[in-house]
Amino acid sequence: MSSWMSQRYLKLNLSKTDKSLYIKNKVRCPVKRNTFLWSGAAPTIISVFTSFGLWIPRSMVFVELSIGMYFAICFYLMLMNIIEGFGGKDSLVKKMENTTLHISTGPCCCCCLCLPRIHLTKKKVNIFILGVSQMACLKPIFSFIGLFLWADGIFNPDDVSSQSLALWMGTIIGVCTIIALWPIGILFREAKVHLADKNIAAKFAVFQTLLILTTLQASIFSILASVGQIPCFPPYSSKARSQLMNNSLLIVETFILSVVARNAYRKQDKEMGFSLKPEHV
Image (cartoon, rainbow, N blue to C red):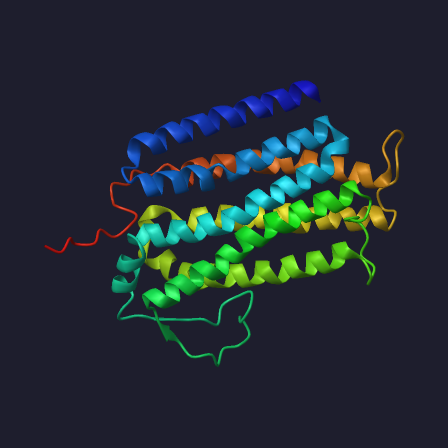
């Protein structure tokens, strides 16, 4: 296991280094460059966090909170990928001035087909950014609160009773996640057409897959452990074994995603990621 882990860790680092050097050399805009570096590194960074969970099983609470905080920031980075792909907020509004946007998209309003289309303005773009930024801000705050309360024995992530603090915090974060996904879905619907040459569909696919793997997959293993489908095996309890199984699988999955992300972000880009305002004399 140790040799296998070391090989995966080395390959991930090599892939990340190669992709970072390519982006630094081939992406001219410094704004785009930083966004691509941080968002493209998501599979690798999550894999590194997960490796610590395998090496130090008692650190799983810290690992889960760290993954949650970083991926919350990835929501904002994904939106910036789209906006900067159009050339910034001003360029996005200008290119969409003759286009009406569908807002009946998932996960909020996928069933509300009667919702009217909207014209994009700079104010609405700022609202979209605010809707995603709340997730990037609230998730780290809630994670730190949960960490401090866990140290005092008040917070238990596995307790889902009606009086559990973890249940209410998880519910709030779930609502924030849905709200954050809505603006991204609205803009991606247009971006996959206008930014097809920038591999935006592949970047969004990596983002969606990571979202499923870091949330749904972990929940499935946790449920299987709670109903006794994953037996304990000394010195590991049923819960610890489910976490080890999830982490082992997640490392393989993020390794594959890191290869996909490498190809998705390996694209020469000489356009600016923001609009240059003309100077008034």
